[in-house]
Amino acid sequence: MHIIAQCPRCGYRWWLEAAAADRRARCRKCSLLLKVPNLTEVPDATDVINQARSELYVDDSGKVFG
Image 1 (cartoon, rainbow, N blue to C red):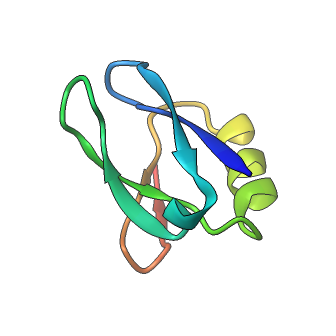
Image 2 (image 1 turned 45 degrees about the horizontal axis):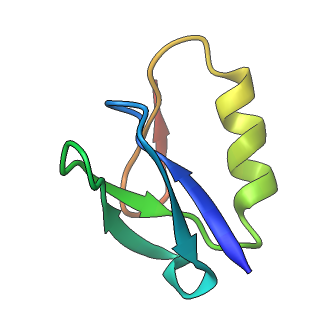
């Protein structure tokens, strides 16, 4: 299984192995460090992103700002 990651800064997309879930990954284009959600959190993360009206920030503990 693969995960498609998209950088929120530059929009670059790339494939990650499923083992990358719930870890941090660095964008291969702009070097932004981002957290890859756990596979069980993906539907919740997608809902939050779809409801966001502006930029969205999530800290290491999972708190959402924005």
